[in-house]
Image 1 (cartoon, one colour):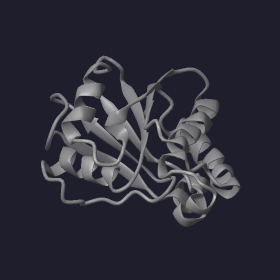
Image 2 (cartoon, rainbow, N blue to C red):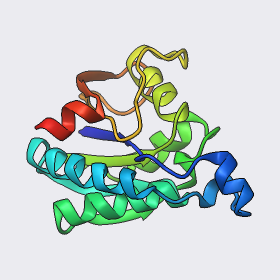
Image 3 (cartoon, rainbow, N blue to C red):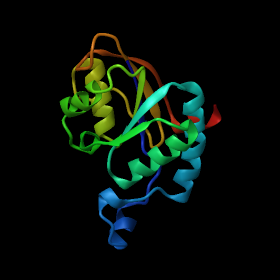
Image 4 (cartoon, one colour):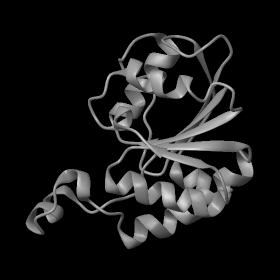
Amino acid sequence: MEVLVVRHALALDKDEASQQGLADRDRPLTPEGATKMKRIARALASRVPEVSVLVTSPWRRAVETGDLLQKAYGRFQRFESEALVPGAEPDALVGELSAYAADPVVALVGHEPHLSGWVSWCLTASLEPVVELRKGGACLLRFREGLGAGRARLLWLMTPSLLRRL
């Protein structure tokens, strides 16, 4: 199984959202973030065309990023999961993903520092970050012997600017 891990695109600043009465979970993508993510989504769809399932955080910016991925990919199953919100335990996401173990590629959209911690945990069995995903950045992990701590191999990690150039 491969897991495409995508950080949500550029969203409304926390302070600006607060001034507008929006909670952190309700911050939308900025117009610039959406425009850049459209290009990133097209690049991801050409680089990893076999995604069959998308799991996003239920927070607005992740859902909106997922919308843009869905437009680029066309059809796939789509779900929201609390296992992708900041502070969720790594095992919770592994539990969610185990339901899709038969799928060749599952995509995730979430937040920092949760995603980097989860990717690092999958690679090294430690939550100490060894990678950093920028807004709109992505990486591809391969699991050969089941999902879990220290069981993944990093196939690639790309910044948003590199993805937009593909």
